Image 1 (cartoon, rainbow, N blue to C red):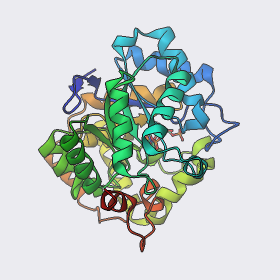
Image 2: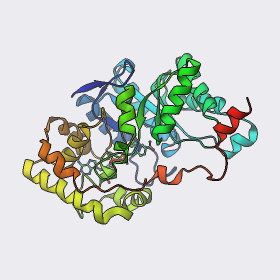
Image 3: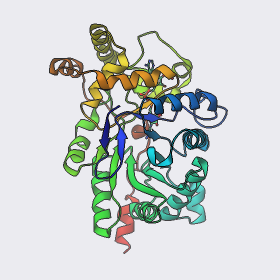
Image 4: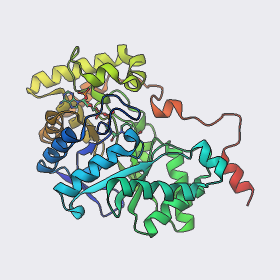
Length: 344
Ligand SMILES: NC(=O)c1ccc[n+]([C@@H]2O[C@H](COP(=O)([O-])OP(=O)(O)OC[C@H]3O[C@@H](n4cnc5c(N)ncnc54)[C@H](OP(=O)(O)O)[C@@H]3O)[C@@H](O)[C@H]2O)c1
């Protein structure tokens, strides 16, 4: 295993992060294809054996049961100080807004619930999962800073964000003497490269780590055409993310298959070896043992400059998809954080 320091932090993480969205009770929550606790434990056990120390979950995953499975497994199988646990909180609900629970309180309530699910005293990285257009940014950041100050998380990160949002939040944190985001978890892979437009530059300049999700395009960059699974059949959000651009993207997938055959490796290794030339630690989902084994092997593959050019040259800019496509401000309304700063 190879390890890397995560941006401006003291966290030393494996260059493969195990994504835990596929773990949890499949009878509740967003996904019908998640794996049960016994199979989750097998994958976590194998990941630890392979040197993976970085685990990404969220309160949103199967209504907290991913956090519960991950927490129980890690508490059983590892020393707390040897693993880096990241989890995330969601935007305020309409009900919370009606009850007058502000952004700060929302963050603090959320982290308490996550710690309870995990059975842990602290997480290493607490992530703002989805930009909350209805809550002033200052309230969110104040809550996240308080979580750091009280030792409930060591560091903070952000996901599904534009570069301008990260830059603005970190400037606000600096102004207030608060904790800043040390990592960004956005959608980035060989067929979704919009991060290269601005985020990559911001992250390099400010030493913010990139830990992209859907590193294998939810399986599309790891499976031979025609190869299927429960998830491929049932994950409608994945199809929403990738089906519209499939015709163009499949030309890139074909090149991944060609290079995999050339090197005698799995597609996963080609796709991740490419991403590892760009970012610190891609987040990879696994529903079978061989998935995490394949991901770790990608660290041994060196792609040449020609390989990289061959993989990249057919990409044409994409519209944002998935969370970034659906989470939008109400366009003709003044953003809530602008309103909040005018009221001061
Ligand atoms: N912040 C966010 O909004 C956000 C959003 C999405 C995900 N995430 C995080 O990122 C993690 C990964 O996301 P993801 O699951 O969408 O993407 P992914 O890592 O791109 O895809 C994982 C899927 O790829 C397939 N796969 C992996 N290795 C394989 C191999 N060797 N051969 C064949 N298939 C293989 C499996 O599909 P099958 O199960 O179909 O076999 C697996 O479920 C999540 O667990 C979560 O932690 C965060």
